[in-house]
Image (tube, rainbow, N blue to C red; front, top):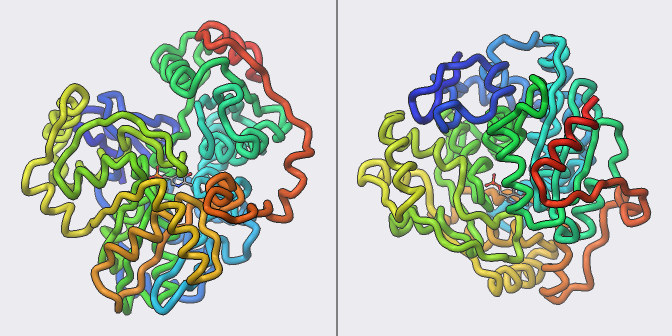
Length: 462
Ligand SMILES: *Cc1c(COP(=O)(O)O)cnc(C)c1O
């Protein structure tokens, strides 16, 4: 298997190269040149297997023999041993046919741990083999930074620098990053906003001279290994509910579209999925595109589900590539136009998308209402991101007979502000984190100046 760009021009790469590369040189994203299949028998044989074993089987074709099977199995087992629930991602039945897939039992209490616990270890493996070191740089307003730090804290060949806007992330989110005291972890609080931090990371990727040839690696959701790791829980949860013998539907709280795209890949591999329901908050580009063919940027709105606050969904490009039947030139033309003016999809690709996807947008007032209503009906306290999914699933599911699985993307304790606004006294952190507010913190405050940040990175990398 090789990996090709959604814009059709960058060279094809191996798995190892794609994991170390991030974005393609033509501005596109990498996808496998052919989608591996899981046969009816392959799926049937997964019944009763551990999460790590299912993960190994689902991901093996994507790794393409580039990591020895026994080593890869070890990496997978180690990654998922960091989760606090034995099932890794347990299913929680809410009512007759609506399930929550709890993706928040990892070290930072959000679904990004599922991919980043694996990605850090895969990167470290390849770097060790090559005798190289690499630097990770990222900007975060919350979930991604802490999950990336937790995923890399034990990696000998990586130094990780995460920029967050000083005094503009919640205390829990900051402490999840700054209380990791490993020697290869550097938290930088930028005296500016998230966009300033993001711009400095982008500029550093565009001109890497300050690192004297050391590789700079991106761990945002354009990295193929993150998608690959997320395919697994769609397969594992569907198998737990009877796949391949019966179909299920999934509802996914979405932003950059990495999560739900992984579900779509599972379907293309052969998993029987009736429907994907995309839930958005008020930042609803995905819903506008699917419902009204309005593919245009709108002003960012700060919502109660902040990890879904986006203007553009970067991974949507991967789905467009499939909808346009892998015509990279058309995808490139569409996305270049979209940068400067409101756009629309061609009729046939849009029709193809509507065969698999429904969508629903949920505003802040509704998020609060849903948290109360879901608690009244099920005794569960949902986090605000999961609440968008709960509502979207109830509204958009095609029929009551097909089980619908809503992906619970974060633990409610991580977004207690919304839960308190909904009228609850708050949610305690899980036991292994209940001393988070007393732990020692370490971070460096820097001005929002590119040269200061780059000098800090260059001097502190090991
Ligand atoms: C990142 C995140 C999302 C959005 O996931 P995408 O893959 O970007 O669509 C949803 N909920 C939570 C809690 C997140 O951290």
